[in-house]
Amino acid sequence: MSVVDDVKDRLDVVDVVSGYVSLKKAGRTFKAACPFHTEKTPSFVVDPQRQSWRCFGACATGGDAFSFVMRKEGIGFGDALRTLAERAGVEIRPKAEAERADVLLRVNNEAARFYQEALASPEGEHARRYLQERRVDGPTTAEFQIGLSPRGGTALKEHVSSLGLDLEHAVDAGLLRRYEDGGLRDFFRGRLMFPIHDRRGRVAGFGARTLDGSDPKYINTPTTRVFDKRGTLYGLHLAAEAIREGGQAVVVEGYMDAMAAHQHGYRGVVASMGTALTEQQVAGLRSMASKYVLALDPDAAGQEATLRSLESSWRVVDVQRARARGAADGTSYRRKALDLRIASLPPGRDPDALIREEPSAWERALDDAAPFMEFYIPAVVSKHDVTTSEGKQDAVTALSPAIAATSNAFEQDEYINLLADRLGVDRRLLEASISRTRREGRRAERGRRGGPEDTTTFLADRRDHLEDYTLALLLRYPDLRAGEGALDPDYFRRTENRELFTCMSSSTTMEDVRKRLDDTLHDHLDALIQLDLSPTESWPFEEAFGQAARRLEQRHFKELQVALLATENPTLPPDRDVEESIVNLNADLRSSFVRKGKRAI
Image (cartoon, rainbow, N blue to C red; front, side, top):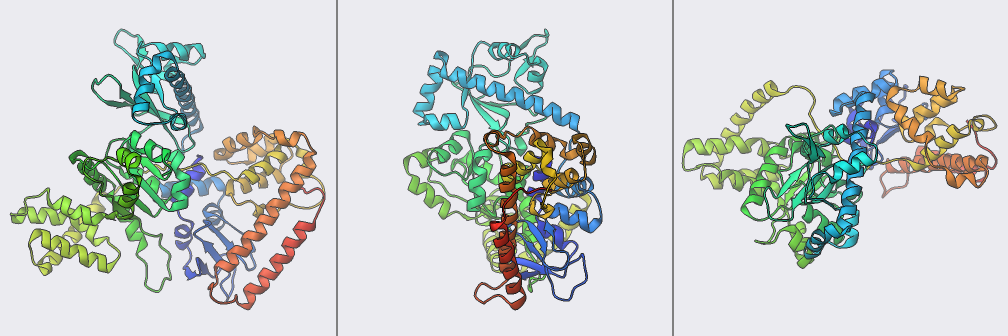
């Protein structure tokens, strides 16, 4: 995923726009007077579902969070990217550093293929038998790219050398270890290998399980430029689409748990890789779904991991709940609060076993998952000696931020009653203690806060294939830029594609395009130049471009219709202005469908 996608996934366009404009709810969208021209009737619409804005008045333009900031602040794409990246806590790496990261990813991907081949070899018989005993089938093994690291200690080193790759890159990737005598040996030896992928499905690191009972049972790639266990969720590259579609992410503990879930059709499941869920991991999920369920092992270690997950990730949930609280009249938008729940699994049944042996019980555990406070309050209280006043106060101090941040007043009342009952104190006394603790906590938090939150998201790369294809044709066949007709920049959803199209339309050479384009988009330009257009080679590229351009135009008009209707109450007919606009859009759409011939910039 590009840094642009990373920023988009952490920021909500309505949050960004509401920092400049007072928005009011209108159907499933938000409306306001357009900030770019004077008007009496609001025609400016922000759509949280599509993450876009549109002026249906004099401006007649729209876009995403980037294009809004560019226009509102009067800045270019690069400055808008840096402004929003700082707000989102996204680091924009220098190109040289990004290239070094790409080298490590390449080495990791080559290692993953090597480990897969080792698993399929005669040496992998024992590992294959283990997978069969764990009932991991062939397609799942292939999908997760499971492999085996040979025992010898130099097999991967020799393989990397045979490919002509620098061994130092394999050291930097954590695949080889340098010993005191200066020699290099494989870091992973005789272990079942679990590649850990980034959001684009590239191998960022590895988890490795012993097969001979030796300790440690699991080891991981050390932290590198491309791998940080604290910010990684296993299987997210496969689960992202299902999480977004279902609005729910299920977090399990181990590799096998996640693999069992995917093998049996529960695609929205990721694993925290045996550790407590971190703040960075929760930050990655918060833009993908509004609900997530912790389904960790029911044993003592699993329960402790659940508690640590709640404590370590609470700040992110706290921020989300605070944003969700808005004025009662709905004049300002706040993103929907995260709904965090805890699944109670039967004793002695981890997710892997439950999914394989009794899937209905697994589904029931997810459906019946309780709000996390119903788990969190008793768990925290049990860690303190509440027979003493000091222990009671410590429990209140630990739980006050979570209770105070609960946006639903009825839930908050229920949690206060639950805590008062657990502590054996009068409710009024408890409320006074919570209020005092909150004031002290706010003062302390203000003192602790520094720079932007260090969060990392792991999301599926969401390219717009139609836009990419159209731009790739223009780049491959410059003659398409001349001729009849016009391709409107507004037809491009993605700001980076709109920016590239604008640069192309005012440039005569590729060198000129690159010079005009912000440095952060050079990789995007290179990717489009290299895009495979083989299906186009067999028929006239003018016709291919004409069809692609008309599809962009038609999609644009259809989306405008949907955006207009979304501002209305679905139970009532649209008002006269909206109806007139829809009629005009229908005419434009009909004209696009009947128009033939070559399209050009």
